[in-house]
Length: 451
Image 1 (cartoon, rainbow, N blue to C red):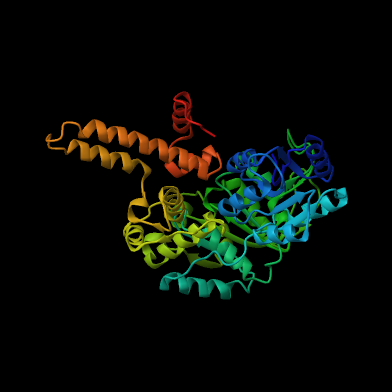
Image 2 (cartoon, rainbow, N blue to C red):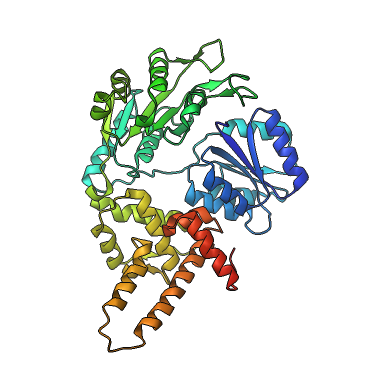
């Protein structure tokens, strides 16, 4: 299993193979594709991609368009652009748009490896993503800024999607370790059989499939911060080994015979009730106290109402890439956002914002563009049909025909807005990937141009 991968996006077959070979000889894990749309598809499925090298001039989605999509979808992912037509103006433009660096072809293998070493797992985000307008989060942000100056372990609790990783990144960015790496790992997303190897690394031959030595997340976070998300999902055996690493400040790779000294700050997060988990022997009490030196609780979005609209505006700006006209939320749209209780927190809000950007026309997002539940569009119309008093005999078929066209338009617009990325389109529309594939197949059979 790869612990951190580099994605190479290059349409020249020979050059792509040369770049991949060079990086692999440098002991990096590499995936390669030949265009921007394929890159988005890979990034939608592989959470271990930690650096992207992308050509600029490609058919379909070029490197600049890919960069803009990544700044919206994965603002922390570092992107290095490559071009044979490099100029100072292009370099400045690319850096302003969020590229972490720029390579002019042809380049030496040593330069490519140096960039890979420097930027793998780097944080490419700029500015402060932790929005705090509500008095509750303003106070939390003040505490986080003070806490950042120490190396104390922090345990962040809160509901799923409430922004725990954003708060952890803010602590890192405000700390003396800000120039070091910020390594985030979702403990629940890693198979139990591989979590230990992912955290602590392994030597060649340590287990079946370990064809070469790999550093773990602790090593990758040297001089920086390691964020362990969903720490409560870690199995008991790995908890015991994690406790020892935290106590001794050193790690031993699986299959290794030497200890590696660590200089890493550990932040962790969970949405479980630790008291219940400890009582039921699901989580070690001694590890809990080691992680919980300074506890922080991030309230759900419904409890910090004044943050909802500012966060939505931040998300709108991100998805507009700074290139197209950024619509504003009118009063009706803002009121609809603040009236909802957001069980899915910021993740759900982000999906609603993306749907609104697809539906909106003009320079404003109106209340009707705020589609909280994509399925509710059809449900509301169906209810209006059922409530018809029978005085209009043709209302139902006409409405149903219009309803079908709305569904088609929404699917096609959302697919186009996400550059053909089906996984992201399905998520925004709250459809299963299988249902989306079925609907797209039907549209294609009906003569629609489906990307």
